[in-house]
Image 1 (cartoon, rainbow, N blue to C red):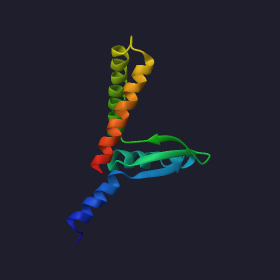
Image 2 (image 1 turned 30 degrees about the vertical axis):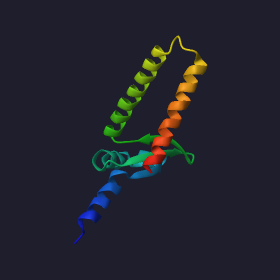
Image 3 (image 1 turned 90 degrees about the vertical axis):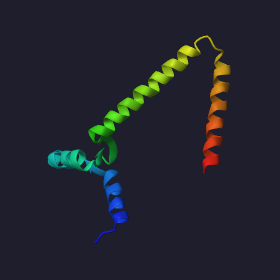
Image 4 (image 1 turned 120 degrees about the vertical axis):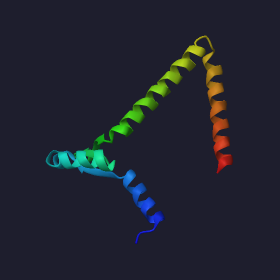
Length: 110
């Protein structure tokens, strides 16, 4: 019988499964790929001529990405508006100081 920890690890592995296929195989197996994405939460990297060309991800992943992207650009717009009359060199210095503070904080947490 599989232990609880083992079942949790299996579930985690399935939740982050990323598969690679090419465009020809995708055409032949589209229904299967869509089922695996929808029901197993797998992601697929689609290659064309051996190079990554696109990704198929579960809808929840795509929706989370869109929300994160919109929050990011809204933050950028607010920062730009708040600094529209600021000296660009001063803004750059503020950004660099904030970046160093965050990195120092992250280093302390490790």
